[in-house]
Amino acid sequence: MTTSTTPTWLRAAVSRVEQATELDPLVQRLAPPAERLATGPTGGFLGGGWLGHALHPLLTDLPLGCWIGSGLLDLVGGRGAHRSSRRLVGLGLLFVPVTAASGVADWASVDERPTKRVGVVHAVGNGLVGGLYLMSWLARRRDRHIAGTVLGLTGGTFAWATGYLGGHMSFARGAGVGERGLDAPALQVDQHAPDGPREPSAADSEQVRTSSEPGPAGSTADRGRDASHGEVAGRD
Image (cartoon, one colour):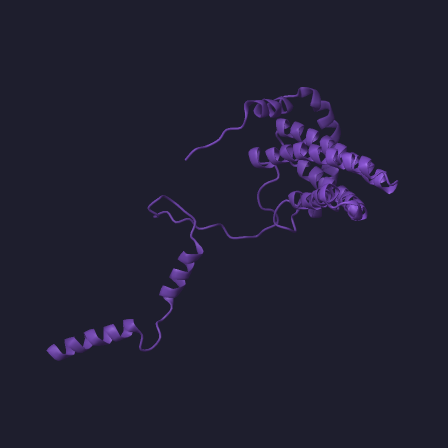
């Protein structure tokens, strides 16, 4: 199977952020309020303990979904879609505070300094994105729709970059991953599988359940056993 590799320029850019020690003063300044937020009254909600996993990735879909919808209306909706597009921008802005707070709560639990640095750039970039969409909404309110469209599309472009950094933190560095608040039994592992240990599937469970149930009266298996007993009795 052919595998692709990350472009050199992209790896180098992320590496520069991870090794940027000049970000450490900002990391140290933000750490105490982030810790207070994560351990405060709303920390359990923002961290996703009630959900079973991190809440932040789920919440990011809300502002981004609104803003993507607004951008599509700007591009193909015509003049009749101006009001709907403005409303979507405003609705996306309403979701920003709780989305940002959940991200800060996750960031507080990160121990690795390089990942902390990426998180700071991710947060500052998202602040810029939110600011651009706020300016877009204000311009639309003044009937400056073209300016609002440009500002919105610019914010959306920056959101791609900040979203990549968020994905790098979660999927490449493992920040914020894993179950939370779940009291689930440990998974059983099949040690005798031909391809090595594997987790039992639903089909395996169904097979075990079926084999352990008594067969119905007159089943094929029962008739076979009755026939074999009859042959033995006849020989006797």
